Length: 409
Ligand code: UDP
Image (cartoon, rainbow, N blue to C red; front, side, top):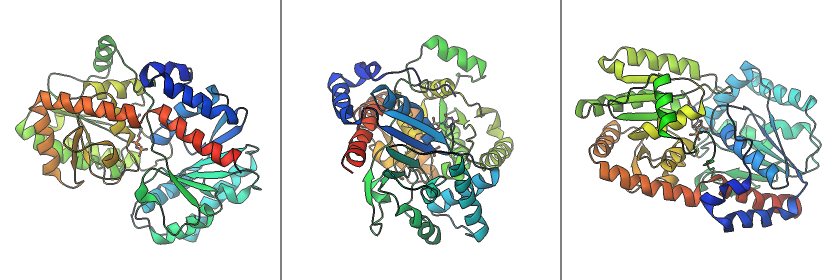
């Protein structure tokens, strides 16, 4: 993964303005030299890795000693934690003792070779959540949940709550994900994108053409794209159904771009299912599946698309939507989770109920047939992201949090 190491806060001045940069420096003063540890479960693939790749270097740039460790799990561990992830998003789970044991053992093993002497520990998502059991707690621990956990499986949630209550604070991405019966302070922090990362930075027409040629993406027809892990919650099969309807009215191509995340063992199976579904269609030659892990390519695909679709059934936040809006692309997306916070329906895109195939298709056709509408939506979307969902705002929220957690405690 090409990462963002190399950018410093001053590089963002042109995008967000001097006052934002000065406020961040002022807010960091009390935190100079403090050791902050982030722990998550993968260095690449998915939104959390994406965020940490930009956030951790910036924290270091402003005088904090920010550390990032990734969890070492076995394939079995990641199969189990993916089931936990699905169950937190509302799916059924056969919650057995073996699953609990393996989950706990992997956390215990990690603690044996990982020293934690930091001033604050931030644990991302459920995989490393029980780590707190295996350390003598000497500092504030914060659990950052990136998942849509509005309607979790109750048994699993009860089990995880035993660990969550030991934390000093819980961070979620949406008011709806807070739990009224949880006796721990819960705060909302919205995720964000890095406008200077390889995935989001401006790129020249020359680079765009080079990548399109290299990855054999023709541009003689309008492009509709979904960038997402091959995951049932992202409903790639549903995207193909939408595409078929759109294509009946307006010739176009579909790109499904999904690299495989190291902590998501279901991806390969779902990719195979999609390939089979696409192969059985007469529209097959106009469906392009991309599995390369390449941030510039994602940037190129988003910039080259006429419409971005995000047909998630559940979505903790949906950084892919933020990325597309930042690139002034009209987005047609499900009215779920964090997506609803980002898109203003009919203004910066269209919000559609997740299973409404016709609604998705109709709105995509509307955009394809009205370039003025597409442009107007693109402008609105970019402004919304500039004000609310850039990495500088995220950094600033973390500083507020750390000032409270580390300094006041
Ligand atoms: N992503 C990517 N390549 C892919 C698919 C996804 O780089 O083939 C990135 C995407 O650009 C975004 C992140 O992975 O930055 C996905 O974050 P999101 O919040 O949309 O979903 P998550 O995968 O965390 O559920």
